[in-house]
Image (cartoon, rainbow over all chains, first blue to last red; front, side, top):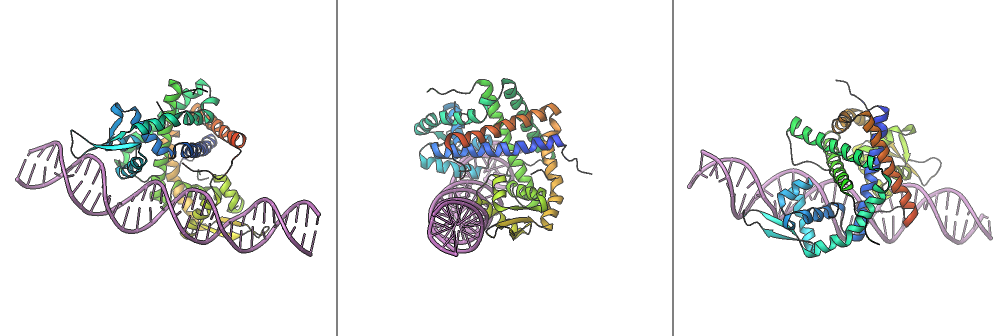
Length: 169
Length: 169
DNA sequence: AGGTATTGTTTAAAACTTGAACCACTGTGC
DNA sequence: GCACAGTGGTTCAAGTTTTAAACAATACCT
């Protein structure tokens, strides 16, 4: 079967996408590192916890929500625990389980750094997008997510673990 | 000054963006790791070289194009050289300089793995987007890139180096 | 009970990033 | 010509992160 290469328009869009996302991720990481002392992944773990009922989540659920391996999450939470932003608690209903709990210090850190983070996101995106574009963005990203998740459970059947990590850059 | 939080629509779009981009980057990395034996960054270095005149680029230019530090690029190219996909050559016009050159083996690897890569990108994006959405995506990503690049040279004046890495996840 | 699947951690190795120091060379001003 | 600031690129050591493969403890099923 012969390859269906990208059209010119698709290539332009793809390149634009790759550089924009990588630039933006760098920008966010830099800012978060400076102000919260942690990269985006760790910050987003805290943010996720802050929205969970009782500010706590099972390790496995958290890993799944963040789409990372449990091993990786264990490492991350260990570090966050050292920072004092997260605490582990045993799970009452399942003695194998552990909950990651956002501490008050963690919540305080979020409250202190969220404005800067939002400012970054605004400056990079929303201050320059029309309301229509915001909707378009959501729609497109939703499509991407659905495409990947359907594709994954379908074709290869594989789930976790995964490696995170013209020829379309 | 009080924080301008994200509107509901902006939050939805932002979350959608974050999970889509991270999922997609994972998917691409996994596939490229499996088929080309390298993560996306390295692959994209090869791809970039393949399009340059004479399949070669000055180290600094390459670093700038990829938006990474020279140090990081040195590391990457060293690895690619071990793989045999890139070779270093001295620069004829500036004896300080070095060119990274895509080898025949590197080109062959690209040709062998590009179809799979394109397939990944198609399956995740373009097979599910209308032509209008493709244009919207390009436009939005262009806006992001411009916003970040203008913002960087303006406010803080800083350039390189940078650190690569409710509270908006 | 006995076997199997989950949960989460540990471990050791490998991959990567960073920042600073550094050498070789270039270009500029005097 | 010659100091001298600047550029191009690498090296180095330290630190961070990721991975895969065990592993122990517990739960679930029959």
